[in-house]
Length: 252
Ligand SMILES: *[C@@H]1O[C@H](CO)[C@@H](O)[C@H](O)[C@H]1NC(C)=O
Ligand SMILES: *[C@@H]1O[C@H](CO)[C@@H](O)[C@H](O)[C@H]1NC(C)=O
Ligand SMILES: *[C@@H]1O[C@H](CO)[C@@H](O)[C@H](O)[C@H]1NC(C)=O
Ligand SMILES: *[C@@H]1O[C@H](CO)[C@@H](O)[C@H](O)[C@H]1NC(C)=O
Image (tube, rainbow, N blue to C red; front, side, top):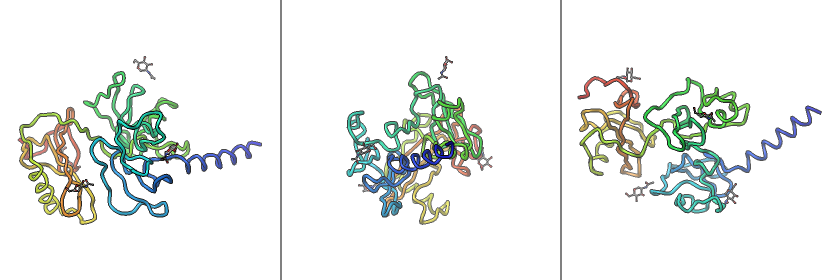
C-alpha cells in the first residue's frame, strides 16, 4: 500500500514539475528560459541556447509569447506569470516572513513587508536559501540534497544580491561612454574570456572602492550598471568581485 502511494507521489510530482512555469527551465508556453527575473535565453527542443537577453526596463521574464512584459501589467488575474518573480511562486527578496532569500545562498531580515538589506547574511557553503524551507522547517538555509529530496528549489536564481538603488558614498558618476570603455579596459586587464557574458569590475576612477561596474556583453558593446557596496560591506574587493567589510589595499 505504502509503495503504491510512493509511486503515485513520484508520478504526480513528475507531472506537476513538467507543467509548472519554473525559473531557469525552458518554458513549454513560449520556449524561453528565464535566467532571472529580468533576463532570458531562447530554447530549442527544451534546451537553452544563445546569449542572455535582457528584458527592457520595468519588464520581467514571463511565459507570454512576448516574453518580457511590464510588471505593472501582471496582476493576479492575468494568466501570464512572472516566472522568476513572486507571482511565479518564487518570492525572491519578497518579505512574507521574518527573513527572505535575496540570492541563491544569501538572506536578509524583513521589517514587516520591507526588506532590511543593510545586513546580508550568508548560508553555509553547500547550503541553499529557501523561503519554503523557512516556512515549513524554520530554517532558511538547507543543504541542497535536502531541498532536492523535498522537491524545493533555491528561492532566488541570482548568485549574488545586488540592489538597484544606488547609495551615494561617492561623488563619481560615470557617463554611459565612460562605463562602456571601463568595461572594455577591464575585459583586457582581467583577461576575461570571450565566452563570458558578464562580469563585475571595480570602477577605477572611484578610488574609495565603494562602487563597481556590472559589464554585460551586447554584440560589440556593453550594457553596464554602476553599483555600490553598502554597509556593513562597503568596499568592493576586485580579487573576489564581492563587497567586503575591510578596506582592500589601494583604496582611499
Ligand atoms: C544592446 O544594445 C542596443 C543598442 O545600444 C540596445 O538597443 C539593446 O537594447 C541592447 N540589448 C540588450 C539585450 O540590452
Ligand atoms: C502561463 O502560466 C500559467 C500558469 O502555469 C498558465 O495558467 C497560463 O495559461 C500561461 N500563460 C500562457 C500565455 O501560456
Ligand atoms: C516574526 O518575528 C516576530 C517578532 O519577533 C514574532 O512574534 C513572530 O512569531 C515571527 N514570525 C514568524 C513567522 O516566525
Ligand atoms: C579579497 O578577496 C581575496 C580573494 O578572495 C582575499 O584573499 C582577500 O583577503 C580579500 N581582501 C579583502 C580586503 O577582503
